[in-house]
Amino acid sequence: MHPIKRAVEYKGSLEFTRSELVGILAFSLRLMDVKAAKELIAKSLEEGLLEEKDGLLVVNKALLAEEEAGEDFFNEMVSYIAESLGWEREEVIEGIRSMRERYGDLDEKVLAYLFGMDKGVDMSRFKDRLEL
Figure 1 (cartoon, rainbow, N blue to C red):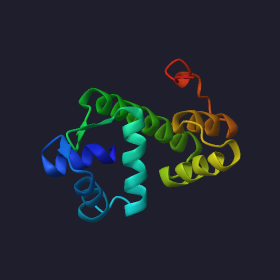
Figure 2 (cartoon, one colour; figure 1 turned 45 degrees about the horizontal axis):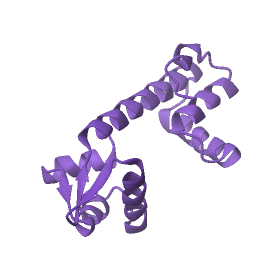
Figure 3 (cartoon, rainbow, N blue to C red; figure 1 turned 180 degrees about the vertical axis):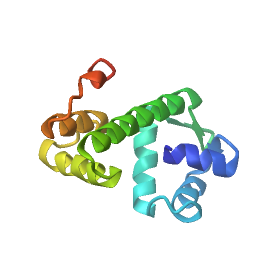
Figure 4 (cartoon, rainbow, N blue to C red; figure 1 turned 60 degrees about the vertical axis):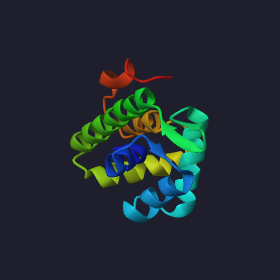
């Protein structure tokens, strides 16, 4: 689940002050440290997932739903790769992270696809759904 969605569920609202959102992500939910929470907020503002209105950060519900759908697709690929190789999900995710070091800052779904291909897994079922 996306960290912003977890924060929305925790607070029960789509509006946060910046410090409140950092506090929820870093301390209340313990999803990340303060620096990572601030980076997530900055990235979410750039992508339009969060909008700043009257000093408050407001979550864009439509984009959050799209993010969730993308995470589900990523998790589906990870599960498929793990099952195909007889690995644990954590091993697959670790392998995908190591590919990030090799290929740079590609989308995690593209990295998962490349990782599966690299390991000899038939990833053709995901090709049409992958946004390139």
